[in-house]
Length: 106
Image 1 (cartoon, helix red, strand yellow):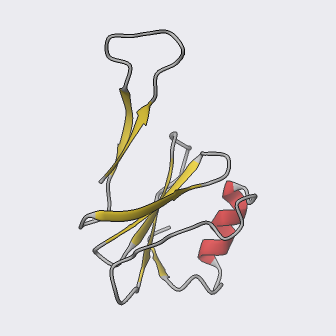
Image 2: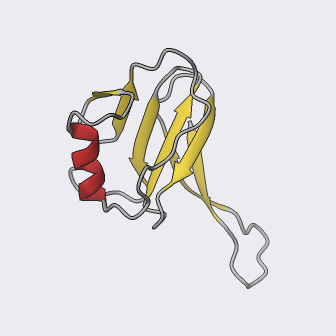
Image 3: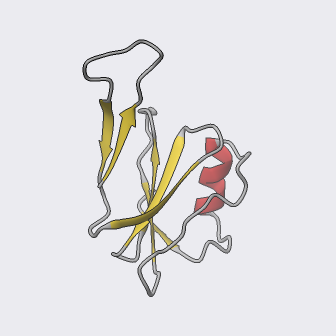
């Protein structure tokens, strides 16, 4: 899985790192990840030949996307257009665009 941690601010603290959230859905080791330009969406890929798309914070009615169909473990994932909104990304992943993957789930 993937863990996102809040980093410390300017003030010195005893335990500055705080776990924000754990993300699941990939079966093997995570080998690559990318953040959207606004840091609201996380894309990760792994040895299980799948990629998973999560929102960093909870979004009502959002279910993480799983991109399947790769023949080898993933060594790189990225957002094609870093300026796209979450709605535009949803359209990209659900249309028959050339993502190199098959969408499972939402």
